[in-house]
Length: 111
Length: 116
Image (cartoon, rainbow over all chains, first blue to last red; front, side, top):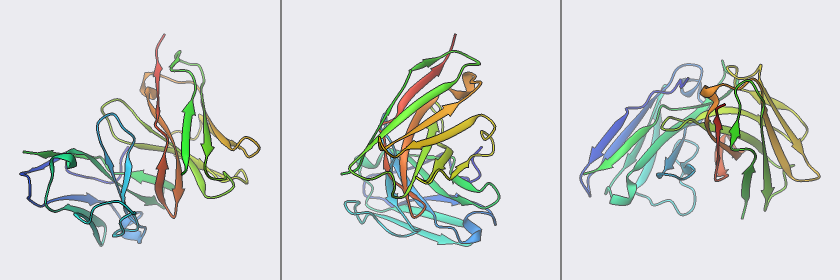
């Protein structure tokens, strides 16, 4: 039962910029809890892409960037590449559930 | 390098108990919070619960009545028990480390199928 809503899919041509939205509520993103983003390639475990709303772990290309405003957050991928084709999930903490919540997930397709 | 390795039966019968273990290497289990997360085939991620080495736990309210997460500091491992399973519990189960609210290390995951 995901409480963070993402678009099911986004697509773009190589080199283009795509964005993925993550909409929450006043008990999670809107309550100032951090948003994290994960990339999941087919058949593999998710990988941390963005933490603390805007920070990239070591080794993550700067083509990936995160932002947050109010009860929503976004992940942007600039200079889209074929290897970016994957599922992407946002994640935060929810005070009403007293636990972590994930987004519904977005599949990125490179045309 | 932190590594997490899940293990346990890949097939569990309906109404029985699912039991998994996760061995942590490269870090002490007395640091951070350790979590279980699952992903049904073709679906999204669901947080199950977490534990601190002191034994303090938090569970997803939707699973709380059936879940127990425990830790064995002498073996540097954590465990998951989920009782009264149904087909809806079929999923890849991941153990994971959470640092400052983000999952920075994941196990490779183990598929558990609930079927008679």
